[in-house]
Length: 416
Ligand SMILES: [Zn+2]
Image (tube, rainbow, N blue to C red; front, side):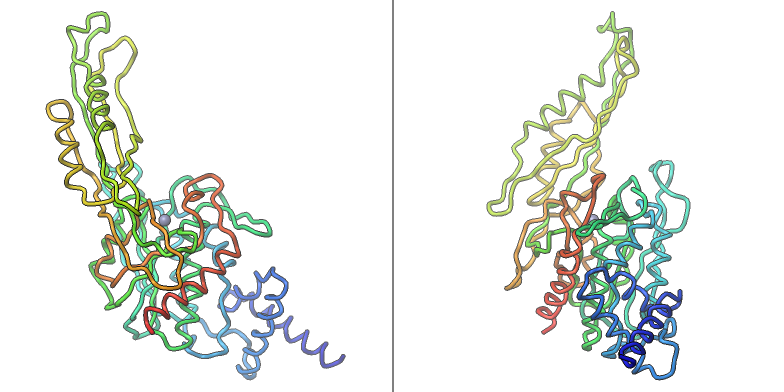
């Protein structure tokens, strides 16, 4: 009994040390709310203390050696909570970038920041004024064979601190893509511990224009494979739809609505063009799906009794195939009636299936087309895109933990 009591005291001391700000091991212990794992990790921690000799139980910040079996696993659920707590709406990503840089440095990674400029506020009123940067992390001096990547930014609005129940974590970014980041870091830790050369890349701006990925693509690190994380319900994507964003602008002449012959309605012109665009026959690819079209923004006019002199629409087309044919059809539909700008164009992608993985087609776009210099791409992640961008965004804890195993399995399949 006496021995057992002593052992319990050691564990309690370990937990106290674990909460020191400099201790990377904190995350492991604090969150073990699943009965059997609590015991397992606490045990691991005391093994760590033993092997660490008379030292405090905290591994010194920034000097964690890789590949040692006593390294304490980080807890992806706790890291997800911490990431979700931080508002990182696109253009306002500095806080999450700072947190992740410090976290990964404490884990022993060499961390590099890649500055990403804010857009011109005259062109984009949502632009922020603070810094924003990508975070690249690798074991010191290592050229990676494989890089895990995802994005740190989220869509608005921020939903406040992370909430949870027994099964799920709730909050903006829970599944898109902060839980994914945490799962990838946990997987990387396991892979690095057995000698795999793995690095991590977390970018800004994915939810708007892939600005962070485009910057990262200027300085690739020599990886052969890129495993990008987006919510695919833990299935490997064999294709992802492309995307074409179209802005239409119609101009006319203002007049009193009682005398329409004196004016020229911009709204009438725009509606006619939109009708023709909606009537287009868009391509379908067997086994993959169809192109889809959404008129997401429509603005124009000043009052019901005024002939409107301007009107605009913004359309997003999800592509299965190259965009050129659709671009030409849109230009023909608008000819002489509206100005057309194609403001974003991301290609349709097909990716390799790997035996042993369930597959899916991602109907959404990702940063992959902007990360062409980072190796052969794969797309895999926990969580459902159907709850991403909603007020009830969540991720299942079991799915998050399952994805760590899947990331490890996929990396091992690719690296042999
Ligand atoms: Zn996403």
